[in-house]
Amino acid sequence: MKVESISRQSLWSAWNKRLKALRNVPPVLRMVWDSGRAVVAADAALRLLLALIPLAMLYVSRWIIGAVDRHVHGSGPLVAWFWWMVALDFALAAIGALLSRTVDYCDALLADKFTLYISVRIMEHASSLDLASYEDPSFYDKMERARVQATDRLGMIQATGRVLQQVMTTVTLAVGILLYSPWLLLVLVACVVPAFLGESHFAFLGYTLAFEQTPVRRQLDYLRALGSSKESAKELKLFGLRSFLTGEYTNLSRDIYRQNVSLAKRRLWGVAGLSLLSTLGYYGCYAWVVYETVAGGLRVQDLIFLAGAIAGASSNIQQVFSTLSSIADQALFLTDLIDFFATQPTVRSKPGALPAPRLIRSGFEFRKVTFVYPGTSHVVLKDLNFRLEPSERIALIGENGQGKTTIVKLLTRLYDPSDGQILLDGIDLREYDLDSLCRQIAVIFQDFVRYDLTAAQNIAVGQIEEKQNGARIEGAARKSLAHGVVARLPLAYGQMLGRRFEGGVDLSGGEWQKLALARAYLRDAQVLVLDEPTASLDARSEHEVFQRFAELTEGKMALLISHRFSTVRMADRILVLADGSIAEEGNHSKLVAQGGLYSEMFELQASRYR
Image 1 (cartoon, helix red, strand yellow):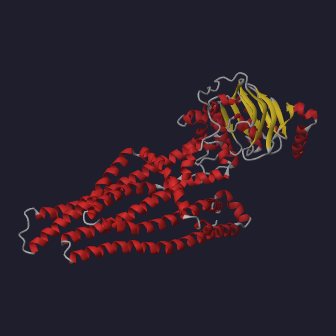
Image 2 (image 1 turned 180 degrees about the vertical axis):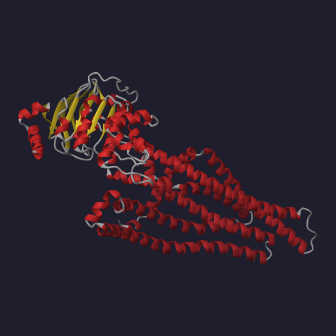
Image 3 (image 1 turned 135 degrees about the horizontal axis):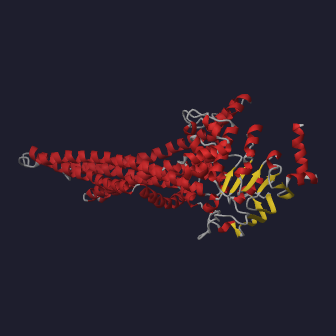
């Protein structure tokens, strides 16, 4: 990360990027408006009222001082409504305080509403994106920045409201100053601009540095999670990795610290001098007003009014520039949030897509399917041809990396083929509505998710619409042999699982897998896909599961992926994959008799039990 080279960028280049980034503000303000329209409208109205209070108080104070001055110098008694003006001054101060508190209340409400709104939108959009997006490290960096920006940009939202208030206050005070001398206002503005430009330049450098540090910070998050997670605790102790992980974390953290301190020092010295210029401008104007009053050019009440107006205008001009600078700087950080929402999935339903058939008649056909994962050149599948017919059970076997799980991903349209077609009842999968297609397929991957939810919810995620249907959930658990696991838990189906939350109970790998299988059975889809369905089960549990397998797949299409020949031998047809193509095809007996690749793998596995 080259902070020094970044700092030598031209000021114009920095401003150009910041001005372009301002295009991010309207879409975000639209999100703010959508998150809480009534609160936004109330906040804006209150801020406009609050902006008028300073000028009103100065005018009333000017009148009071003038009345007192005339009375002291014998020009006459106090006017009858003098004390009413004093009361008005107090009332304005009280109203200002109440309005300020109410604005803070609205800001707090809006912060909560916006955080909820934007977090839900990020979750919804992330879940709609392609699986390929999640396999791209640069996407993770963008999504991480978008996630952080969703909440960290609350300051920009509040700053937008403040700048409206500050501009209104500045305009009203400026009008008062202009009536006396336009030059005073010009000097105030001219002395603030350099400090504003300096702050803006260093803020831009801060954004650039933060942007470049994102991958490192993500690595820090990973090291922190790795060093404190239950999953890694055993190996950390056994392999003595504590010093290694803490050392890596410390080194990366120190690099970031040095970069941040270097930039902070340069910002301190660079902006300090320009800030003095702003202070000089204010006191120069103040001294001129005092001189004019002493010389007889201004009355005492005019001195009071102008001194207050100059102080208020100077402060607000600086705040306006500072707030605008903050908005421009934070708009830079919004780039990834806007880009994230602009990212669209390539695998999606076409307009007017067909609903998936409620009764599949001719099944699936892979026709000359070739597939290469995005961003790679390795051909995983090449000119693959096979059919999966109704009520047929097919097993896929082969060494790791031969494309077994890739076939499942293509069947479920997590990806589209690089070449060739996948047909369902003779129609290309891309012609079907994606959600409708997914409802017809139940899939349990080998790396299934262990949800830190209740046992019932862990099963219900297979068909979330049935989350309140206890009878169906229990029925699915009985089919997968998970009911016995759940029945032993203290709270049965209401038991929180996992160790993330208090009172949670963890399960063994085999017990978790039975719950995952229950999800597939709850879905009651036409196609059942099981990727290593018994990998974590002991021999007895595996035997019990497959005793019921024929019954559970009755009338369904089933696709099995397994390295256990005790599992695949009960399939109607076995496809042996090698080099991205089907090397052998047939039932267990036929393939063993052929003496080919299947027979060789079967003998290797069988020899372990002899």
